[in-house]
Amino acid sequence: MKALIVITGASSGIGEAIARHFSTQGHPLLLLARRVERLQAMGLPHTLCEQVDVTDQASFEVAIQKAEAQYGPADALINNAGVMLLGQIDSQDASEWKRMFDVNVLGLLNGMQAVLAPMKARNRGTIINISSIAGKKTFPDHAAYCGTKFAVHAISENVREEVAASNVRVTTIAPGAVETELLSHTSSQSIKDDYDAWKEEMGGVLAADDVARAVLFAYQQPQNVCIREIALAPTKQQ
Ligand code: NDP
Image (cartoon, rainbow, N blue to C red; front, side, top):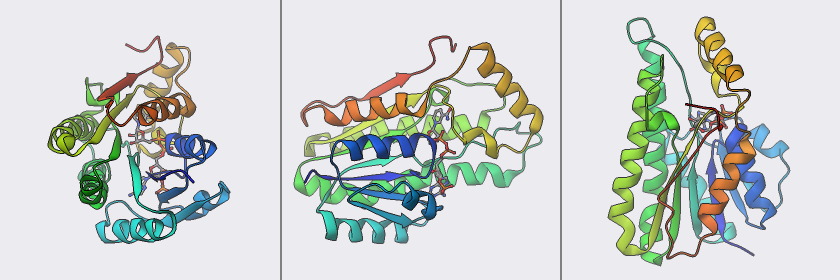
């Protein structure tokens, strides 16, 4: 059997598509999210589904240990879990910034800490961090979200340099707009309406499968080839 792949936020959108692509390639999977029933409903073979909030480092590590006991060492961690709560800093509830930094940044650090030492010891492994075009440029109403994704870019590149000598790869994937549940959690209806109008002006956005193909492409390179970053967006997105 192929190597174990760990995917966070696999209960919807991009994470679900990534899980389906790796499963089709014959990989056993550890899928993590809070809505574990959605993970189980996917019905993928050789897959352990665990209810893990990525901000809880202890339960993240326990789930990885459980999966590794069943399927062997994790060869890749795909840090995909994320939330986007758009708003303006003068009016947005501070709890929303905290949640985004907790999930998008600290959750990603928790995941890397759980797998990096054993990957370094084995002299192979791949971390794929899902950032965003909003981790490369700013957009209206995105200040805190962009802050989290700029952080993902910086952290990923820094960790890549730290673990390169151990033959461990770190890849940053930066998608533009993708049709998923992501926008639905923003509380301001007018911001959601503006975002939907922007998507319509572009004549549509990416599908989650478009991003999943990029993730699989990066992973499937030989271990001595590290795709450092892939940025992909709807052709008409500025
Ligand atoms: P979705 O809202 O469809 O999926 C988000 C996933 O993250 C869900 O599976 C959710 O699972 C999980 N998640 C959220 N909070 C937590 C948590 N605390 N612990 C564990 N899992 C959590 O959105 P997308 O698929 O679009 O988002 C996936 C990633 O892609 C995010 O990092 C997002 O920032 C990024 N991205 C998305 C873009 C887009 O336009 N859609 C563009 C660029 C980047 P559950 O609720 O069950 O816990």
